[in-house]
Length: 249
Ligand SMILES: Nc1nc2c(ncn2[C@@H]2O[C@H](COP(=O)(O)OP(=O)(O)O)[C@@H](O)[C@H]2O)c(=O)[nH]1
Ligand SMILES: [Mg+2]
Image (cartoon, rainbow, N blue to C red; front, side, top):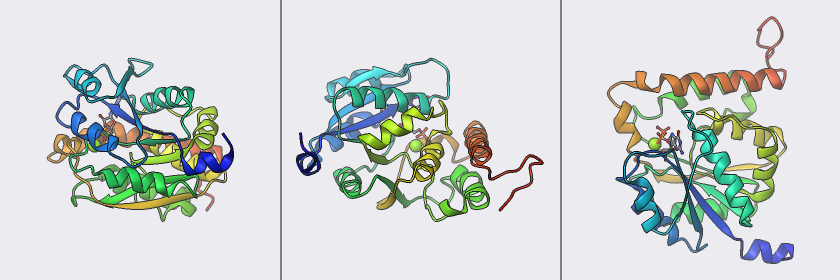
């Protein structure tokens, strides 16, 4: 396939990492399948104890299990999904959260459109004011201090991320983390690798995970810790913190 063909008719794969999302999984798969890009769907499941796996299979997805039983495993699931998608010859790979209640087909079309002329397209949205605590209180303030060139990104932890296969291959080689740090790690490493990222506005986002912590953001402590750990590690790697732990910039 020559380059022009590849760009005009890309083979698109949508990957959903899933953990007990039986209320939303069918609808998000069917919605993604209606995209003008006619994507194949891969579900990377966390050994869900509910009906997620069966419902995903019936809705037409290929269902695989994440590589390890250690949790949290969002990063592990994304890496497992990438290896699977790359082995099936995908040109463009898009991740979407499976717990989205108001996903529309336009989200898929817009994100894939966004990375036809760019290396990576990431979704951003409006959310409930109490939603996104780790984004607002950990990721963005830390990036502002340690990676100020990334502080304009609205959603550094967006789960809606699309990139060309070359970009994903390069990122996989750099040893991504297994847990909740994966999203900000992909953001930092993509930019530090010299790629261009576009943020694409997707409107309002409603997702079921918010219901788990809307009354007690303390439930987000593990996610906060892993995001913080990842940003500190990346800051050390790129010399943004000196040996006395003083911030250089
Ligand atoms: N395979 C796998 N998927 C996960 C895991 N944790 C979360 N997910 C999925 O990853 C997506 C984002 O997780 P979610 O809990 O909604 O994160 P939040 O939106 O930041 O609160 C959802 O589709 C989850 O079902 C995990 O450990 N393994
Ligand atoms: Mg969610």
